Amino acid sequence: MERNLLLTSFQDFGLADPISRALKEENYLTPTPIQAQTIPIALTGRDVVGIAQTGTGKTAAFALPILHRLLQSRIRPQSKACRVLVLSPTRELSGQILDSFNAYGRHMRLTSALAIGGVPMGRQVRSVMQGVEVLVATPGRLLDLVQSNGLKLGQVEFLVLDEADRMLDMGFINDIRKIVAKLPIKRQTLFFSATMPKDIAELAEAMLRDPARVAVTPVSSTVDRITQRIIQVDHTAKPTLLAQLLKQEAVGRALIFTRTKHGADKVVKGLARAGITSNAIHGNKSQNHRERVLAAFRSGEIRTLVATDIAARGIDVDGISHVVNFDLPNIPETYVHRIGRTARAGAEGIAISLVAGGEELAYLRDIEKLIRISLPREDRRTPGHRDSAPAQAQHRGGRSGRPNETVAGAKAPRRHRRGGGKKGHPQTNRHEANRQEPIRPSHGGAKSEGLGPESIQGVAFLHRESRPNIRPNRVQRPR
Ligand code: AMP
Image (cartoon, rainbow, N blue to C red; front, side):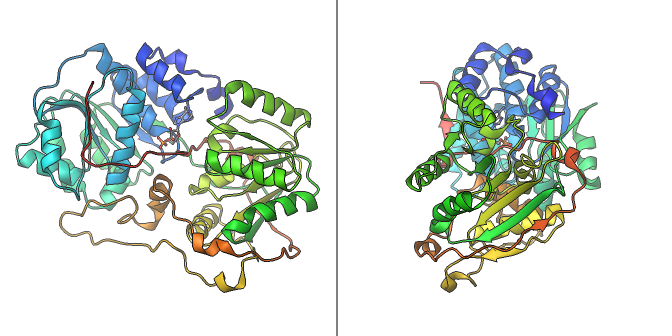
């Protein structure tokens, strides 16, 4: 499925020129599966209900068609009104959605604002005073704004509900119902949720009119020809360990994943210091560079390639003997997707994950839950840090009354933690990383009992590689 969808280009959608230009600048080359499915339908004005998780590119899936349609009928929003209302469960996610709208709409003089809880309301009231085209909000604060006459909802033409299941988990159902009751009936609604249990389906049913249904199926199993090894290691010892592994192992081709572009460049430099030549591909490199490096990797001229998840999309190279997760991904499906790059065409493959303490241990648990395999750990941490507890405590909030609007993940039950984790600014256990120990020989890995290779080809998950800090109460106006 993915391969066919990769043939679709953003040009095929006929998006307005200011949007296409912004996409080029963002380095978006091919639409993700959820974008390929959603954008053409949403452009016709039809309601959409989508099952898609964070990391699949769903923000652009709803933002791009909405921006296009705003451009088609550019009317000035009335005072204290908005044309587009996006509801999201957390302050942090709301900020990121607003950033995405502003990035894609940067050539169209978009007006936008954020209404989130936990910060004084005065500035938010001022920011919508003259009316904005796009308002991204958490439900509780939005309702406060409306009830204090700071905002009117009668001009909303587009409603987006993002992470609907999470909003319900956080107890926002009544707020959402109250908000929807105040919206014009004639509007386009785009409704996204990672899961679709009965209560969410009922909510969607009540809010949407003849919606088109789109879905990307999460990947969940690994191939049984892949030997999976987990090596626990101090954060700063990772580069040395990586170099040693690449020297010790019988590497045909190795694909090394990092979570950030900066991280990829650092790995290349670290390997160079150890005498290993490698190349990086990521969003800051030109398309030309990417194609040259990939061709060299394919031909065997380059044996070691370092990539971010986004840059690695579409890499279709057989003969990758090793996949190394220099950083563990915070979306478990991404792990399955990454390691599926090895053991292609009936070959065997080895996947090695370097896991530092803190949040990476939590990511590992999520991965094991997804693939339903408990992976044996090889422990190469400095002895003093072996029992360190994960850095991120899990918070669970009460569900009575109105929920506190909070930063991503703080009130979310465990199944959603990965969404919050991805969007946040991960705090690695830096203190843990200052000591190194000699590398001990490794033990064998685990073979997974997967369902087969076809199950890993469903979805391309993407990572936000860098995000500006989120500042509350922003209003963006044309200069
Ligand atoms: P989302 O699932 O909307 O949070 O998106 C995850 C990340 O993927 C974000 O950093 C987006 O900027 C990025 N992204 C979304 N769509 C594309 C695309 N078609 N090509 C490259 N990156 C994308």
